[in-house]
Amino acid sequence: DKGNHRHFMQKEIYEQPEVLSHTLGAFVDMTTGRTRIPNGQTLDFSNVRRIALSACGTGYYAALVGRYYLERYARIPCDLDVASEFRYRESPLGDVDLALFVSQSGETADTLASLRYAKGEGLRIASVVNVQESTIARESDVVLPTLAGPEIGVASTKAFTCQLISLAALAIHAGVARGVISPERELELTRSLAEVPRLANEALALEDTVEALSREMATKRHALFLGRGFSYPLAMEGALKLKEISYIHAEGYAAGELKHGPIALIDDTMPVVVIAPHDRSFEKTMSNMQEVAARGGRIILFTDAKGAAGSGSDMASTVVLPDMPEILTPIIYAIPLQMLAYHTAVQMGTDVDQPRNLAKSVTVE
Ligand code: F6R
Image 1: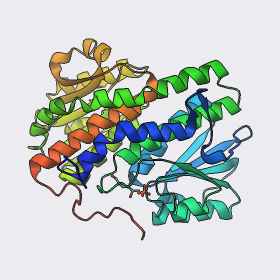
Image 2: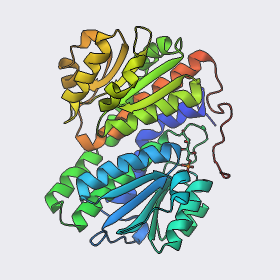
Image 3: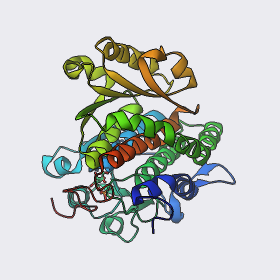
């Protein structure tokens, strides 16, 4: 049932404040502000030397944010692969002693094969999964549940942001276990995570602004998405969402890679989506944005009030998000990117919930 929404995808975008709150509740005791592994399980990070993450598609971009979180908040080195490569690469696992998988369906063939490979190599297995009765959940030592509820739209939305909030809480939990996050800092970070439902609602309120921008996007054949740091995985996720449902060719790049090739694509017809909250990467991303502007690129900038003030915003269509702590930006900035893909696809009249050639669950390789 789509309720009063036109598509399941739109309904699922709107469910995010609620399902993010449920998912957070599994990982954080909201009365004490302490993180935990859900359902009474334990996962001891104190002696983990290295983590190998793998997943497919949107799950892979969630894992990429997860790596940034685990490295920044828990100081654990991480490897990351798309599952279709991990399963065959036979990479020497060296000091890896935990394998972490991310999957909405829990049935993705390549992710499951990677899990079995890692298990065969004697690694401990933890998985962030949305479908609790899935094969990946059953075969994992530790199940990190996302409580997004059933996701019907083929393009993943609420499952992705729930994966991000789980990984954020997990990274904080790991940081505490390793003594790199003090108990006070843990409380501060979980208080930030508790702001997610409110901030997600504020992001949803940008729908009309984003819809207006989608009208021009719907006239394009190509688009480029740029981000740095925490926003780099989002650039790739934003591009994936757009190409999946609107069939516009879109590429996500680390903003710092612009000069190394993609800048050749920029002319006055090229839409460039820049994701740049006013964080530690902001100034660098702005200088990349200026390079795009100097070549006439049509910029759509997602930033906050401080970022808008510092961007020389006359060169971009700017969508202003609320201010938020850095750890939240991937979760909240995902929402307007989902809406941009959604409204572009609606303008173009594609089958948003069932895009051509795609299946919700990829159970063959
Ligand atoms: C993108 C999308 C796919 C899936 C991928 C992995 O919107 O839905 O890229 O993310 O097929 O699926 P799961 O997470 O079920 O393993």
